[in-house]
Image (cartoon, rainbow, N blue to C red; front, side, top):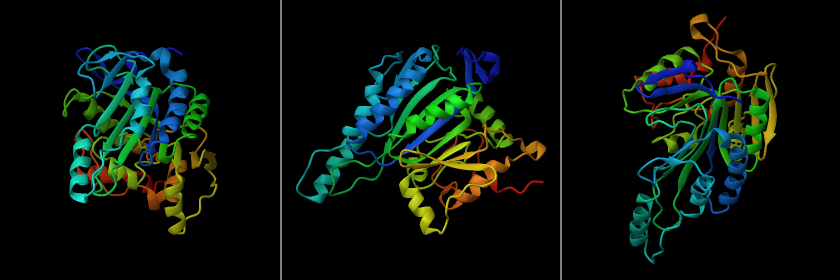
Length: 327
């Protein structure tokens, strides 16, 4: 499979493309536990078989400079799940101090493997992991890590193969939720850079694209699903919330139910759809999936961060875009 041409990029910088339209999958994980190391290894092994020929550069939060991608970089992801225990103390006050000290070295933890070779450029091929530590417990020395794993490939990738690989990766993971379909792969040289503006304009017009933001808003995304996509995965905890809200997942004319490991999978239509609000095209299949999952779908911008010209009002409109009634 050849890489996409730079002409298909959404934005360019001095050294090359800085944002792409892609097919992407986000796996929002349950709070990490030591046993998740083996689960992540399984998913990462499949991702490596898929993407390794196209990955070139590794950017790590624990390393000062980028370096060539190596298989060992996957261990920076999987081993993180077993590294979240602080030293123990006999009293809550000291335990909180020890936990917060350990948190400093483990939060905002990033492993980004991409096909880009130049600084400040993006690639449609990526495999990325991000984790943030929430508020520590004064008794338990285990640190609460909110984590997400993402993969992206060119938007022209065969959708049947994309679906099979995404669901295979999802099966061993303890998922909170997941979303797979059209999205973006970008690098942000600055907060006002052209990639953020280009994605803002594109996402406002095409509702089938997931913004994919997660940095600095992981706790909010743990509580609620960021977006409905072509494939939306719902883990056991959120399935329980749906049941408590009196919602039962059912097939609809455009939404098919499936399973990936312990997660339910809603497939909205046979292929990913972009939509176009300028043409009053908000895909019906996505609206049907959104209606099924609305009690656990994010509908408040509080706690969310999106780069670019987004305001609370425009972000709220984006979160609720599948509630639109179109003729």
